[in-house]
Image 1 (cartoon, rainbow, N blue to C red):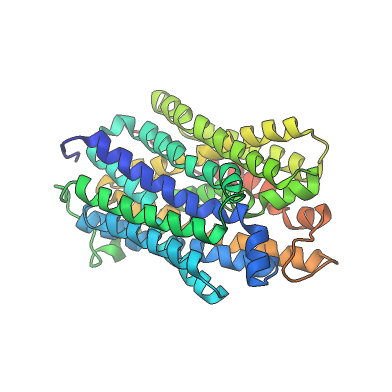
Image 2 (tube, one colour):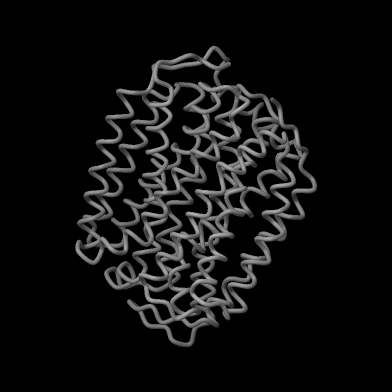
Length: 409
């Protein structure tokens, strides 16, 4: 049941800013690969592990996050989550050793785990269900501006400020945002019976027994793994090695990937709502995503402009993944929308957490030029490690056929 609140669009805008903020924190390591490897004296495998701490914590908190938001509403939970992000960024920026940096990264992941579920919760709870697809996709596209800023523009800032100082200022901004959230979000709550830990077992049992939910989770995680692992960590060094780009040009190419997602997501969400269909869009994402990633990785014959165009198209295709959350909510009891979203996100970020260090491990295994504290990987090393990107899209394409399209207006 939707609840009337004053200034709902202000509330929604602030949660989208929080989502923007956590997306910046998630993606910024793609612009810091050389700095982190050099400063902490680590190799590709250790860098992948460092970045993946964000995703492991994010993944395993998804179901508890959904329950907390369903149970206590947004007033207290979301500001505390944003505050945790800010503190984690400050700790990372001030760290002198890798173990302290890992703690900061984990705190970033813990706080960030609330942002997307919070955005979906507020969208589904305070707005008509008929515009849910548009709000989720539009909010996601605005939030991904954080990823755009964390790649190309962030690289430019790092030419004037040290990465450590910048992250401390980013943390301070998170603390201010947490205060804004606290004073703008409504007091709980809902007229629906909230999800509690006592009935969690029944909810999870129903989700686990639903074959369609397994398919939704597989499709969602497979469609987004290229975003988390390629665009979120290894894309810049790959483009430098495979297409002879400078770090700045490669960073802006990753920004173009996220721009494609930003521009495509709300349009696809709106059209999907009008058509009352989700599956055709998901099938398109899986099929053409596999073709584009295979071309980029194994046939590096494109000009810089061609790379930018393909990454833009790939960003549009990956944004279709947002429709899986709509399918999950529309196929289950709507009062548990927080727990349902968290359940899907658990699979999404668990695969991201596994894939980031896996790529680093495969690169270390294949490379013949391994030196601590430097990036010396060749195109062949990346091609050896990136095989599962096109495979993940193709598997998603196959799993979509097992999803039931149950769009409800």
